[in-house]
Image (cartoon, rainbow, N blue to C red; front, side, top):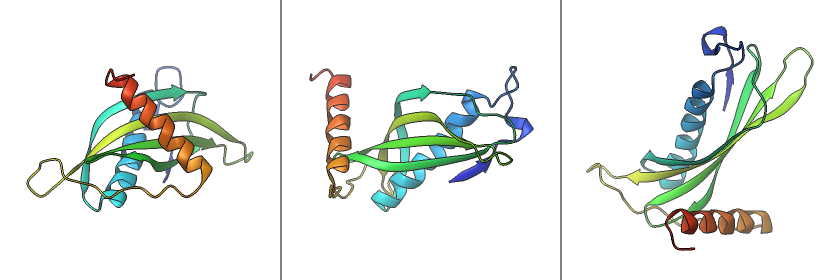
Length: 141
């Protein structure tokens, strides 16, 4: 997903407001979660956000979201944000996030989601890291 960082997204320092970035992150993560589940999904938590560098007004902001882990009704979605200066072509990794989404059925209750195929060592590593983080956050580690 790509969006333009326009002047309305500016904070008091003249760069893009962190809340604006998080809104875009939530939208991108929703798309990944809904596509995987085949159902609507809601944000249960934002497990981690790392702001690495500011996004400037006028940058093209690109968000890449992918499912890292799947439980019975929940999914951990990783989102990476990059900003591109359209004039120089410079691309910067600006933000990384982990979010948990829960699939919602027509009755507005959590519903079962399909499993996740892990076909590469990188996908297996992302799965294991997400599982450890969930266990730690739920006091099981």
